[in-house]
Image (cartoon, rainbow, N blue to C red; front, side, top):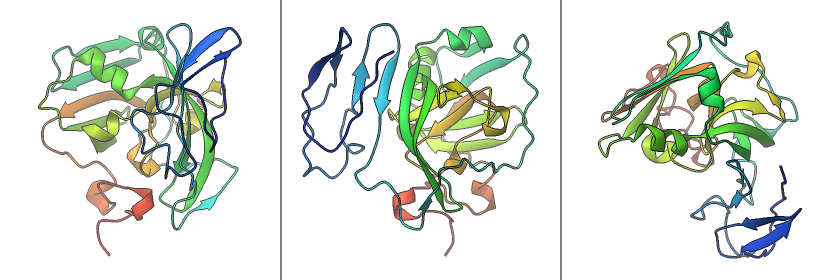
Length: 244
């Protein structure tokens, strides 16, 4: 698969690369723009086949109160799940017209995407330029035919651990259900075989060892949210806790 770096300089809406026509689908970027992330639609690169490559970045990369790390610290309250490829199932329920129950092979057969985005932990570290590969959240929504009454998403881990997010955040182009990281299969300690990644908010809102999604009309705060962590979790506003 071809890839291209997107920086803070103007670029054409369509270019040729390795024989592929790449349509950026957005107006040329100007250094006077505040962020790429705030542009709609995002800089989605449309390549041959059923895979896309999305690069999401802000001109300011490190949110307030964060520091950059080149490592990938492991923080969780659960143990990694025991993955059985034959028994694993991914279920989508709730406010949908077409509930899903997918095997691992069926999930891998869904249209995939490579996403390059930054990752911000509420404990204060940020890891830049992570390459995730998996299925975009909006692809799942399209397959399950979510209803207009679906206002929130509850992400469910194998252990029963949950996290919640508004449907608008889940539909962004920087939300992915990832099974690869850095070109390799996602390690169990980082949430493999499958984890959600919502790059626009703190990482505690994402779920490791993901096995299901439930779309709901009323919000259902998850594990960390009921323990005092912020329900919105915007790192640029330092929404770490629900109390001050």
